[in-house]
Length: 355
Image (tube, rainbow, N blue to C red; front, side):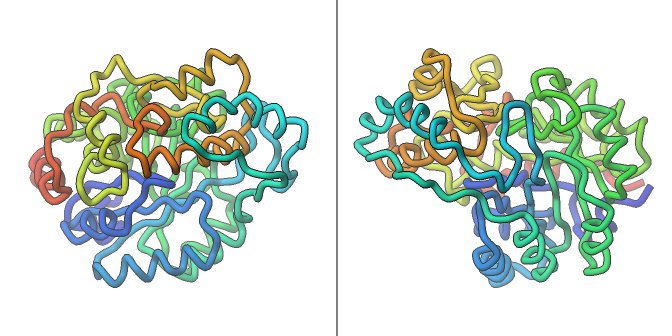
């Protein structure tokens, strides 16, 4: 099995979790410059913006970094990519969310709403940028995608929440696998079964994935300090991916009230909910989550995510945590540092010395 450090050209096997809409060029570059693998989530970004992000990261660091893409996965109750949105579903969702739009003091979007950028256009932009690695969630990249990445000198990383998913990723030719335990923040990247049926904790998931595949396994979920890192390596991981501890730092673009809520959160307080985006994601419940869950209805992904994004953006401007997506993992309350450099040093202290 190749060493993760040699595979990715990094000094320390610590990977920054990609955050989608909460990704930060500064945070990505900080982690890479410290010797790890900074990651930037490209959810919703078109090719021109992807090219600009890669350029901005390179202006801040000459070290390896990763870009992250969502594969065009169609989950239960979701429309296939490119199908567009249903007007009746849009009207129902806008009506259901009316109270939250009003609380934020914003008007709901007008019909029609734009969809997500085509995956192929995003991929072309990523390959043209030639990051050290491209990571994927929600499935196995096709053989053509993997071959094109490798031809451009780009390593491929996949995300799994179960052993069968990890085996499917290895069969698909990925170079490394993120084993994402149920403790992890944000969206669950399950793809062979419903996320609710794929909730395996890191303590059980990591060693079983390590035993089932021959590529390096990156442990994710419940890791926020040197203790979690040491535990992950004891279970056989070749590296760790950390999200919440970095999201709570000054280099992230999470609103200050989001970061404050993370520091005080207890593991049992986080929930897995489809309310804010239409897909299951882990975060801290607030008034917006409770309002949507109590209504008993929501739009499918990505329409729900697009609609709630209207009042979430305004809530970030106002500093109102009750209308935000407070994504965080079960170890968020272990976040102790305000500077990503200090977080990285803490995590690196748990990495065992090379034999």
